[in-house]
Every structure is written in structure tokens, then in C-alpha cells.
Length: 273
Image (cartoon, rainbow, N blue to C red):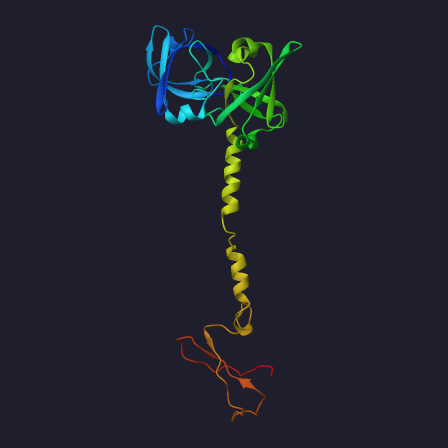
């Protein structure tokens, strides 16, 4: 994982691109000595694996997917030999988290619309593809060529960011010109929220056990519902209309206990109706 805070730049010395893969070699004297083969490094915001190190140079392999999704394979304004690239090592424990969550998984390629000097700062405008527009949030974070930037203006699918002098001088932004291809990565937190909402909307609404239980009680006869006088352990047979020992009473029922103990005489219970 990265933060989008660029600490090093390098220069492309070799770039071999095929339709299904390739390899890039970067001259990076400020960072190459601290790397090891198999380390990860973000190159213009694209997470790559170092496969070779020699004479302050690092090499990384490019998959077909990487070429198709990033500025490595862009038609027009793509990266070429001699181009300056942004480099960032992965975040380590205890290191300051200065930007935002950057995975190095490039979503798409945008096109520079302008780089305009204004006062002490610069305005960088990038046209983004329609399918990426939903990840652009005014005053939110966006990664452009691996740099963590804040969207200051958003209109007509063009994201504009204010670039301070330090960022201008220490990244490859100063080399950008209209039409150049740049790597874009949306905020991963927004992607997780989007995915969660998609799955929630696709799921069928389920009834809670409490709702189902309440619905089922409506089909139970009143005399069998909770709170009624009958119980499973008590048998209430219909008694005769008249009893020999006492005067007849209307609609009397006697209650006999279902207990296994010897039966005892229980006074008759008169039920209404």
C-alpha cells in the first residue's frame, strides 16, 4: 500500500512493450540502492515488482493487463524512453501517513487538458473517462500518476487540482502537457462503499424471524394462542349435562389432570356459553 506522497523520481532508460507484456528499466539513483529484488514499488502510481537491480537501475515486468490499463500502453501521449516517472516505496509501519490510501491498482487513463501557472501555484486539469467519473468527488482525493491530490474543481468530466510549488518541482507534473496520458486511481474507500451498496440492493429483502412469528400466530385458533386457559398438560372432556351428586349446571366441563399421580377429584369448572 502507498500514500501518494512522491519521494523519488527516475528516468525511463528502456521500455519494451508487446501486446501481452513487456519490461521497463528505470534509472533511479536515489532509491535503487535501497531496493531488493522482489520488492514492490509504485511507478507513476502503478504497483510493480522489482525483478532486477544493477548500476542504480531497476527493472520491472509489465503484464498485458498493466499495459492495457495504464499509460504504458496508451495511444498518444504515452510514456517513452527518457520520460521522468514518479517513484514511491510501500508504506511501512510507523511511517507518517501523509496522503491517502493508494493501492497502486490503476483504474484507467486520463488526458491532461491544461497545466496553467497561477500566482505561485499551478492548475492541472485532467479529462477522465465516463466510467471513472463516479469516483471523483469535489474536495475528495484522487491519484494522478501516483500523486495524491485533492479535486478542487469538477465540471464536464474534467478534474482540476491545485499544484503547490513543492509538488511541481519534485514530481513529473512539470513535464506534463495537454494530451498527455496519466494514470488515475480512485479512492478505494469509495469503491468499497459502492460494492457494498450494489450487493445490498441485489439481495432479496428477507423477513425477520419476529415478523414471520407474528404473521403465523394469526392462523392459530384463539383457544390455542398463548395466554388462553387451555394447556397441553390438561385434558378437558365434555361433561354430562347433569351430575348425580349435584344439580345440573349449564355447559359444565370437568378438568382432569394428566399428571401420572393418582387422580384427585377436581371441582367442575363452568365455562361461559
